[in-house]
Length: 297
Figure 1 (cartoon, one colour):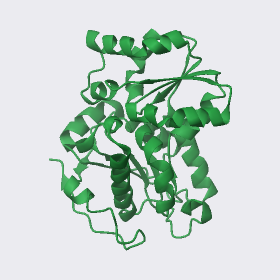
Figure 2: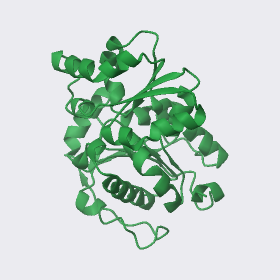
Figure 3: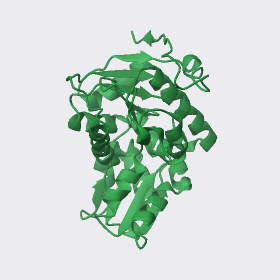
Figure 4: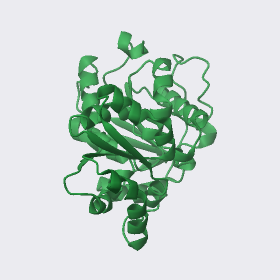
């Protein structure tokens, strides 16, 4: 049984909600969370020095996730949200029992919503997520007769991270990648990577207007609301702030993120040389560790 199913003792309702992804894709989840939980404080981490996650081995993803969650634990988070489908697919089941706070993933909440919207479900995701079969398993457990088509889209994340969202090259990549889905003719399309909604305006042009476009960001945000209420962890005092950290170049992340956030965020640098010291920890319940960061200039 997950540790956080047993008790919420020791978790501070004033603690932050941790959100992490390999880059800017997780901002779609952050914004969904902020929309439903405007009073909460958030800690966002983008592992930009090691993106993309979608081509990594499971062992690598598991190590990265453990490092990030251990660091977030040292910062006193009361909940963590994996704003990354690859991490949700490859590491969630393993790490949930290793940490004393609730950890939410994207896949199951999205699958629950998808089966209520249609019987032919398309999934676009990273190569690692598709190979894991996590979406197919979740969907089939919920609705054994559902028809599923999964398509790996390895070129989508680099497009978003390089801010290449328009033009002939983008349309060519999207059109070619989605060709199997067009033939499948889905009722529902799950955006199985948090970067992909940034390309929705292009993706929509190559699928029928009747297709339901499902962004898991909203479904996991709803799950977070329910979990906070169930564990009595909703903050009693309005906070609302966000702290941003990245393992790569803060200025590069801030410039790209500002287009979707509507403001230029202050982003701190958490070097991999520090992050990689956090796992394996001597004890997950050890006192918070001191972390020094380098601020973006």
